[in-house]
Amino acid sequence: VSQITIETLLAIPSFSIYIFLFRSYLKRRPRILNDSFFTLYLVSAALSMVFFFMNLIFMRIPGIGILCDPIMNSPLSQSTYILSFPYFALYYLPYAMIFSNIAISLNRMCSVLFVVDFVKMWVYITPMAVLLIFFLPLSLSWHLIISPAYYSDVANGLGMNYDKVVNYPKNSMISLITYLSSAGIVTLSTLITALRMTQMVKRHKKSEVSLLLVGALQSFGTLLMAAHSLHMYNHFSEFLYQKRFVIVDYQCFCSAWTLLLLSANVRKEIRRSLLNQLNKTGTVKSSLGKGHSKLSIND
Image (cartoon, rainbow, N blue to C red):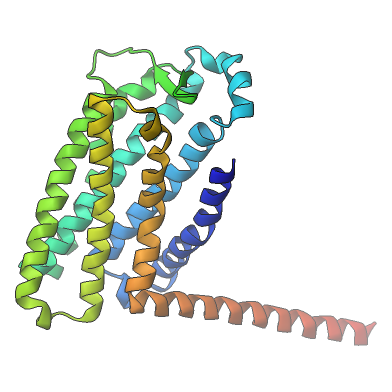
């Protein structure tokens, strides 16, 4: 329970950062957020928030000790289509997050390899990248949404499993191949980006270097997921199974704080958004106060 409480407390400020950036992106469209990197970043942020809450509701909370027995004595311990969508989402969302990491990593690589044509290129590539982020994971997880799922005892806690309706490879095999392939792509693209940056770092603004670091740190989450998946596929570990949520937390929270700490422009934008919100609140209160005074005089 204490760990879930800590995770929730971390989620509040982390997701507040995402929400402020979403509001700025949708309402004001400031120049610093109006590019391909931030479009992909905010897609990744949205996926992270949804995944965190799905994981919290259907995995973390049911795994609390006092809830395990009631759940295992309920119909949810038997195959049911009630759990089909949550089970599907718990695989679909991490895949989508992985693909968003790949897109961000490739975006940063292109920014240093094609300096002149980068902006024009990604005006066309970004919409396609966003579509692929959402649709490619369906090819890996579509069969789960039509399969009944259930809770089962796993490593002194609860896990979810499913009954195969379609003859499809095991989830563990799909996850392993996906995570290892993705880790290879992001590692290669990050190395290429870093090598290129050492040759032309003087030509880049500090803000651009910050975005490259944010992309690299976000890609590190892909490596963690690949390493965890590889170890669990070869040798099941109760300790790693219980601690897999640390990787979830890294994926969901880290990019918010790295962007805030490394990008001065983002800090300015969040500060501006906060000031605008405070000014609006003050204006509304002032208007209400004046209206109340007039009403009292007329009475």
